[in-house]
Length: 265
Image (cartoon, rainbow, N blue to C red; front, side, top):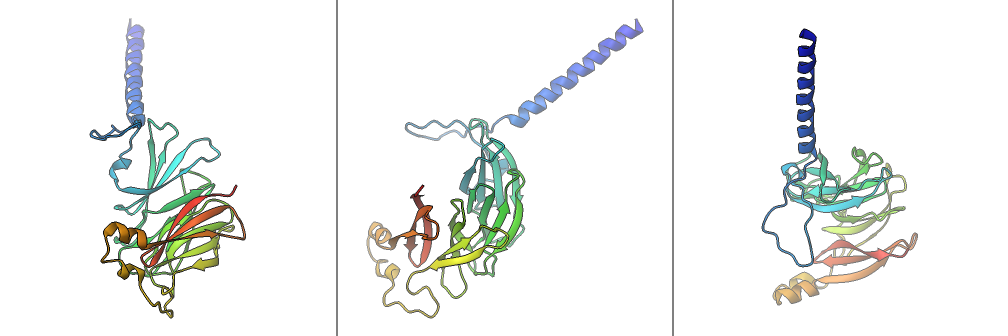
């Protein structure tokens, strides 16, 4: 009689524990609810992540490492740091972690570029301050990036950057002796010791250069749409040492703004 009662109690306890574990597991993998009110055409929203309440993820970079999963790396505009989201199941994205940046509160960490096992993040500024401008990360363990090194000694940080893989990274960054941001090309074949191999800037950006007219001020009185069109010069750029990608250097106002055009294959 006593033995039968003990067996029943043991079964009851195990059943309760199993139910509790099932509830905990289901709550851990449940995706955040898709916010109401969105509109679209020929587009269906299938998944959403609130990123643990850290809204404001701006630049995003998708990577598909050897473990077979898909990870989305994101830079934040309003929180200092970067988020990693597992999007292998797009309808059920899972927040892996948030990596905080313990730096000045008025810096910006919204830019990120990723390829293979290298992630490059920007340290932009709201107010001029001494560098660094970039952080290089080893993401061979995709859920646990490890900082490799920091680069740059500008005063306004870095903005749009691109690393398409291979030997070279293309940066829109501040640079000693220049105004605003210029294009800098780095050899990142040894990410612990990135080496500058080239740079590009507009006339007048170098401290000892003068320019006869300032394109931005010339069009400030124009129609806004015309000003937007006229203040953007496009220069197709090709890195000749390794013809892997073509870039558009959009010289907006008085600084370089980098966009990738496509690959040569």
